Image (tube, rainbow, N blue to C red; front, side, top):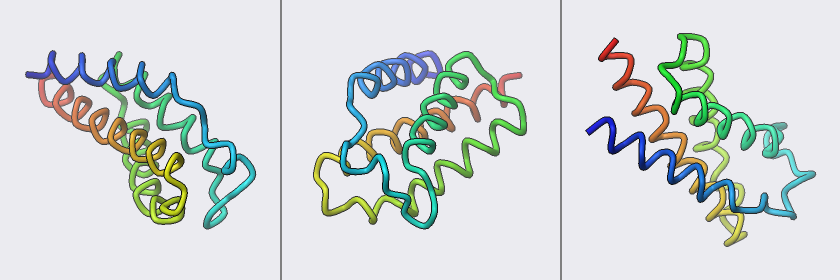
Length: 107
């Protein structure tokens, strides 16, 4: 099952990589958070989780950033494209967390 989740995570990462960051959100910082930085960080955590398992510090960083994105999702709700982009990022981050958790249990 873990192997299947890793394959799915790689597929989600590839699909996400083909998406353009929502242009209207480059300069917006809801609650003082840069969405560009958040997206880049979560995509990087996903790549690291594919190679995982993550170290304790990186695992916590992934969890914190994923939780922050969940809090910020309502901010983009009026923008259909941005919603799709950030929901895809959120789902990918959740799966990265699950993959990493399962890997950590194996090791």
